[in-house]
Image 1 (cartoon, rainbow, N blue to C red):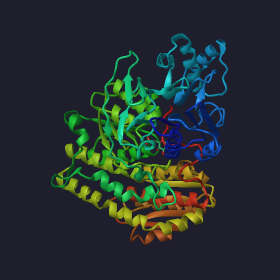
Image 2 (tube, protein in one colour):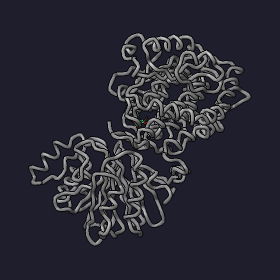
Image 3 (cartoon, protein in one colour):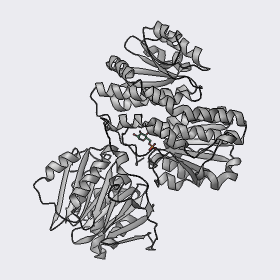
Length: 609
Ligand code: G6P
């Protein structure tokens, strides 16, 4: 999604703004722009990357201590220079950058056009700049014009505005689109994502919906639409930008896949009560009584987080005997999901900013349900909106395709299943048994990662195919879907994730020698049925790669290629198998020379509906 950076302080704004944009590059975008107010208003925009923007600026005078910058992910209008932000009005006095969607932009545009405004882009965002200009005619004051312009807009926005004739301030407003302010020494860095700020300061102010902030030299004022001042805490964030650097890896995705063992350790740290065979979460303490009453769990999420939720459904049902539904957040929000008094809505989101998931949380709250957030990004919107929560502690995930976040979500969800199970039906011994499996998990994931060379060879062999089937049963069905998603996201190869039992009900028609299948055939209750699936595929000349359990000799007779994972209970093995899928997708994309960290058309955090 779009990225926003703003700077006001004593330093040269340009390098700080460009550095901020670079750190937001991972979110995926198609054009970029920057404005610095110095002796005049210096504006540059390009369709392309931050490097292109830097080239465009070279040799021009961009000195000044205040500026705004933007990376755009096209929604309204093509990704070209005219549509890139910052946008300005007719008299080029006000400049804005905007993230989100203005729902009533057509009406506003028509009205402004009637008043003589000429638009130079196809974006909804440009309306902001003209509206401020129009309101300024009435109020002759930048702040008043900004507030009145914002009040007329419907939709989602994180917006920053500056004025050429009033270079002392950046105005900020937020509704359903993240904005954070870094408070440095004699400077403020404003951004849509904390990673653009880390390294300069760890002191962060989170702006909430319907708040307006004014950043001036040495002063910050925050108010609501009624002009009431709002006091804000400065949070000290325990993150470093180092965690968001590639190190010796060629891509963030590979680095993040290899962080899986660490991520598991972090997810379980301090949460296990070994002697009682149970689990505790600090973030759930406030709602212990209500949680005891929980009868049904409804999980809402998107993308990879949705598949983590689907996997958790099997655990909640099997271990805790709890009725569990998993909903795509976008559907949950629009349907009339009937919620009962003792229902718990669990929102899973790496970024904590996904608009659909946030919308689902708000809808659940409106209906009176207790909401629990499983979120990676500390202080994000979903983390703040949910009643109770558990942080993933996976560290910044930069690659658009999610890998380590899935591992941490799965680990946390398994712990949560034990938490509920021990309140319901599970005995202490069973609790201890699963917990000790979880404690051994990171070492086993390490063994899977140790097979990267073999997985790379298989990926090389199969990278020529245009379509793939991913099959799994029971716990392995959700990860088959996640495996297929990984492949399509970064290699642009068509892949379908199916439950093995469904193969005969349609997808089998696709199978021939050009349509290979990736089958999870690890030891467990679904093993024999998966072997039958593999036979069905082989009988149609389909190639099969199997994920199997170490020591399984039988599988070699069935599959063309086999990747072994360490022995473990079938409850836990999907977390091992998914790492194989992640590495396979990574290597296929590498052989096809794709832009692995920034796949086309995708964004890391989808903050529009
Ligand atoms: C985007 C990303 C996916 C991610 C999904 C949900 O589509 O490209 O990788 O799984 O959003 O994101 P969330 O931050 O809510 O987990």
